[in-house]
Image 1 (cartoon, rainbow, N blue to C red):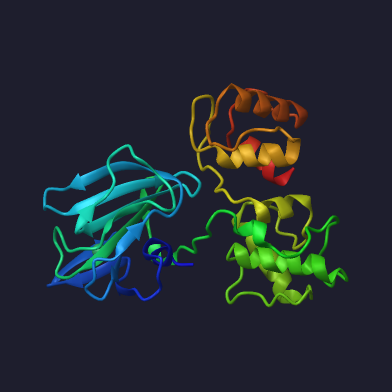
Image 2: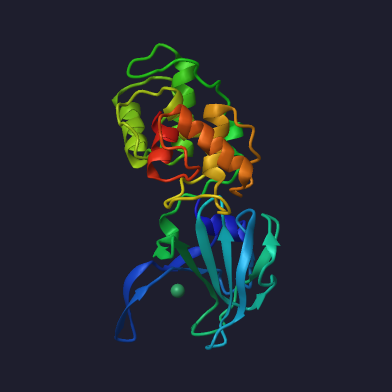
Length: 286
Ligand SMILES: [Zn+2]
């Protein structure tokens, strides 16, 4: 779903200005977000999921805003032009928290949400994101395959599982028909998915591709170690690959470090307890 669907908890919003270069009043500028109209209403704006408010208040133009970090996604969201903000800096939020209401404070000509999304400090297009709420994977009605499957597999339910998960990850556009037939279109979607995750793009769905299809967390883009946060992906993979029994809370404490060292040792890597590109590569590619 679009982030706007999740934020407003309704679907009758409309995009009024897209991310990227635009000209307003003769001035060309890079619009670092997407603007959403609310039919002039002060709709409530909800948190996506569990996260933390890193900053909330009023800026120099009297624009009311909140910045919220979502660790599972690796995104920071800016909610701007609010009529009022209903969270405070440092507050922990859940999916039922109302961040604030849509307004036109700051430099705005009408009531709308300016939504900014940063990943690793860089603004990305909010409207291009296919947001998947937590727990969606649990709803897959098909059993997880127990063997590697590929082109022309005869196991229709296993193929349906693959097709369902590829759709869930947004790997195919338009979405695949979940018909249990592993033809060229499904194979191409598997390869696209594997390539996007830095895996061997062979089109076969074995245990590691299944893990990647199910993992609800984003792979970290930097090296993490003792004391880091945002280690959900690492926890999830260590549990899946090594039965590490870690709590998936994102915190890289001594238990995480010990589990990483054990995994590194077993995998023939330097057992330094840090999770960098080589360790991540082993976790996802074997
Ligand atoms: Zn804007």
